[in-house]
Image 1 (cartoon, rainbow, N blue to C red):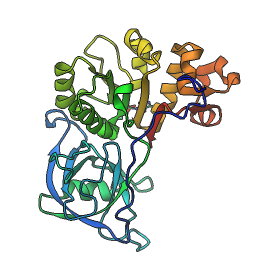
Image 2 (cartoon, protein in one colour):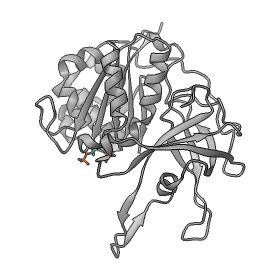
Image 3 (cartoon, helix red, strand yellow):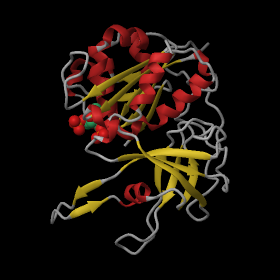
Image 4 (cartoon, rainbow, N blue to C red):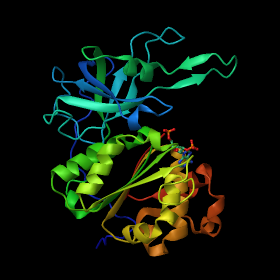
Length: 321
Ligand code: A2P
């Protein structure tokens, strides 16, 4: 018999999804309908826009599930003269889209602005700046849907959710929270969002409002370059495991809980370290299978060591880059 904390647990049943209805060879043509700044009060140093695209003339209409992604084909060619490769963007909208009918999808796009290493001339990320420059009415070539695992389970009420995000990694959690709340799911939904400054928080008004309206929603921020409003110093997402352990350790010790991580890859190692420090072995085993040899020196874990010695179970959903 398989028990809920069996390490061979197949994980929660996931809904069926459709994929790759449009490919780079046969893209669908979407039309931009909105492009809204989604940082706090337009005061952020970075530029992030939630770009909404009408896909009603394509195979994509009504086909996405919250948590999935779509591809964007920027026009033009790269330095080798080849067409730009498709770039994937996570949906920030609910399964029924920004319009309630699945015809308008959205994604938060951060402009990539950097310097070339050799001569420090300006480098602009191709697809992110293309998308952020688009205006309502402009057409855009799309592919997808993409992704079959970063999804809310088929029976959402059977689980509680710990969502962990940095930066634009927040995208899928906006859509997933919308889906869960719209379906009246009464599960605990805790979101921890990491950003450099409070002005960089994305969709902050939405998450604050949901936390105020719904007893089962908890919205916790982790600001890395400012002290926290609740008195803690500068924090990364994973530091909240210790700072808020009174609520998070019981949540992680509950066998209903699933963990979703979306954002910077460095966060994954940090989260596993904090879980290994704070959770008793029987609860840790629900999320991670750890080589016992490395349990003695958790502080020494890095990405390489984690890759070889720590394996997340099917209760952990990862989308890191
Ligand atoms: P920082 O850059 O101060 O080190 P954004 O994508 O908007 O830049 O936000 C990413 C957030 O993730 C920032 O607050 C950044 O902090 C933080 N961050 C950077 N490295 C890690 C890591 N290894 N673990 C968790 N958070 C990280």
